View 1 (cartoon, rainbow, N blue to C red):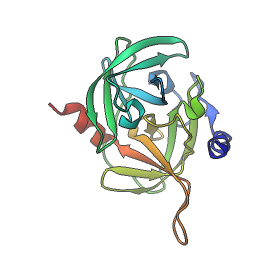
View 2 (view 1 turned 180 degrees about the vertical axis):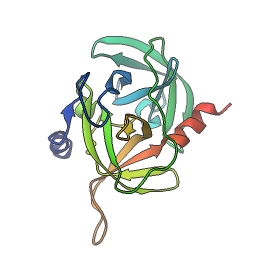
View 3 (view 1 turned 45 degrees about the vertical axis):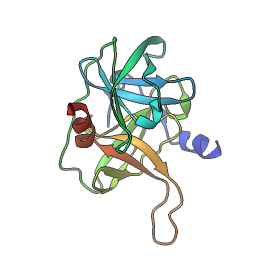
View 4 (view 1 turned 90 degrees about the vertical axis):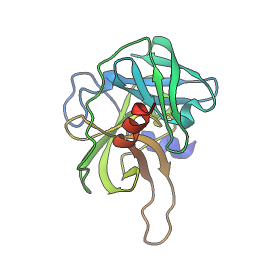
Length: 194
């Protein structure tokens, strides 16, 4: 709990109409709730929300919360536990966030949006890309419990990935406190699967 609270110190509430990285994207970010977990998600298509598979777990439905108080039940329509991606169909609609599936660069500025700390408002944390792996983006935007499933955005507000986990430790010569985001092309592949 202490680590999650410390991470929140580096997060700020997203404000509609703000400026800078990801200023206009928070309206398409949703809180994803089950009886045992709270995470984040974001619209990737008309009535479709992406989130982390570990947020929905074994459930076939999850409560989606928009704007802090509008609730609806989302149905899991795609689930890939190996890549930690779930797609839910939502009866509520928001504009899908624009996607950017290529050209992620080391050192590029990013913003993580989500319901960090389980809060009922979208939180924003900024950082930079530290690497691109086969299916993941390594970054240093602060993540906390509740951030899983939220979008990782570039400076233009386009989704580069979906936040999945925050790693701790590392040891000599290794970075610590790095976030990992599933690359958006991986999320799109799950979305497009038959």
